[in-house]
Image (cartoon, rainbow, N blue to C red):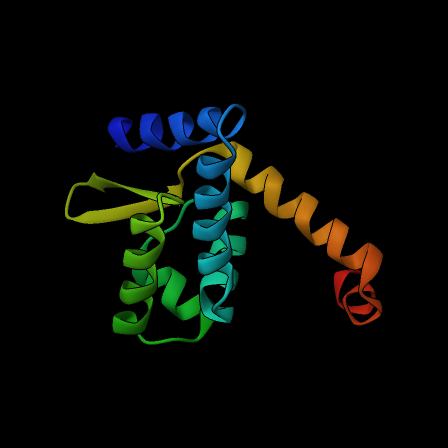
Amino acid sequence: MVGDVVAVTSAFAATRTQPAAAARVLARFGHALSDPTRARLLLALRQAPGYPADLADELGVSRQNLSNHLSCLRDCGLVVSSQEGRRVRYALADPALGHALSDLLSAVAAIDPLAQEDHR
């Protein structure tokens, strides 16, 4: 888990000096948000870490479907997992991602009339 956080943090730090790295980071983030279930999953994890069974119930998807989305988000470097006994807990890889999601929602609400109604 620590290695994943370091890799994500390093990727974000690289975006300050390398435009190509910044584009790759944004593309991964965009890919993660391109699916409504993954977007909802990120928003749920923004509120608090969670366990797959609980997250599947909260989002109204099958556990297998949720597992596939969690795998994608892990591959994108946006979520990390930690073993807790026999359970696995998932969380955003960095608290800054939660802030970025909030900022993105606010920015979209400011320019998209349909989002303004949903964002309230």
